[in-house]
Every structure is written in structure tokens, then in C-alpha cells.
Image (cartoon, rainbow, N blue to C red; front, side):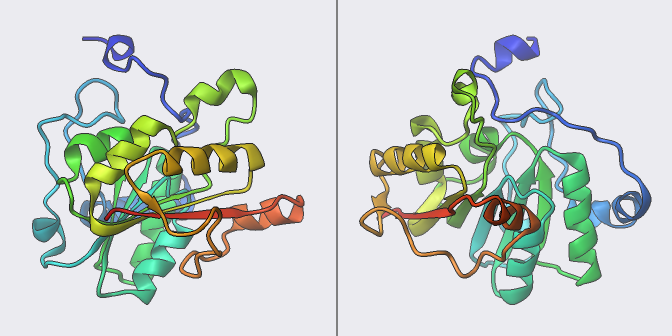
Length: 235
């Protein structure tokens, strides 16, 4: 099987540079053995063998609520959340290697034991890697907006992705989203409202105070773009 036949649909990301330098390289060398979840691959180096199952109790050494951030970037939001909520466990899902290294660097600096990272395609993580009905929350903050109309098919938040999120959430679990692109926000609202999840607000949610203002969000605000939050629950 080749990669093109394995992934019939276009992925929502483009692989950027994977070279590590300086402190990121040092953090990777010193701490990836602890923080990185090594998953067996099927074809692509971001794929997940569908036979692989993530066991949170074994990984974190306890039973605790698990939060997964899809597209964790440089780790600003999830590292702060793991610091503020030691009673919860966190998994950062990202394909960008320097971002994962930066997340590991931040986590190691704070000696966090309740955070892990994985380099993997998010739909595969939710579909087969994560146990069904096991997540307290899924975060999708500022996914690539693919603003050109011809590229919209690459957007992550689609009806099929929403159902993967719903299947992975435990009853009462939350899907939190945020974007600074108006058109994508409308799409997210439509997708979530049409899914099996319940919108906890008439339309937009108030800003999630558990999300720190990242450097990326600051750039969006400086550019004059409005931030839209959404919050859906699995009943």
C-alpha cells in the first residue's frame, strides 16, 4: 500500500521543516524518551497503525481525566493547562517536529509529569489510537484556516471529524474550538451544530479562560481579526 491509496482524502496539514537546532535539539535529546509517545506507523511517518491502542493509565501511571489538543503548535496552551491542572492528564497531537520539541522543552522546564506529545495525523489518533468514550475534552484551537476556496477541502473541522471527536469523548465531555477566520468559524459552527454534540451556547461561546493568549493569537488580534470560540458537549 502506498501513501496516496492509504489516505484517500487530503490531510489538513502541510509538512514544514523538521530540522531541530539549539535548545529544541537539546530538549529532544534529553527528554523525548519520557514525553514522546512512539506509535507504530502504517505508511506515512505521521500515520498510526490502526492496531495500536493508547493506554492512558499505563502512560501516566494513574486514572485521571484526559485532555487532547489537536494541533498543539509550540505547546503554549497545553503546557500552561498541564501546569494549572496537575489533576488532569494532557496529550498534545502535532505533526510539526519543531513544535513538538518546543512543547517538550516547555514541559521539561516545568518538570511536568502529566503531559505527553505525539507526532501523528489527528483523525487517525481519534479514530483508532484513543479508546472510545475516554476523553474529558478535545481542543482544536486555531487550525490551519486554508483561506483559499480551492483549499477548503483540506480543513480539519468537517462532519466526519466531528463524529470522530464525538466518539472519543466520554459522556459529558467537551469539544472546544477557536479560530480567527470568520468563514472557518461559520463552518465550525455549522459542523458542530449538525453533529451529535450539543452546542452549549446559542452560537459563539465566551472566550475559554483556560486558553492562554498565545503568540499566534496575539498576531491575529494585532491584525484586527476577531476570535471566535465554540463549545460542544457530548450528552
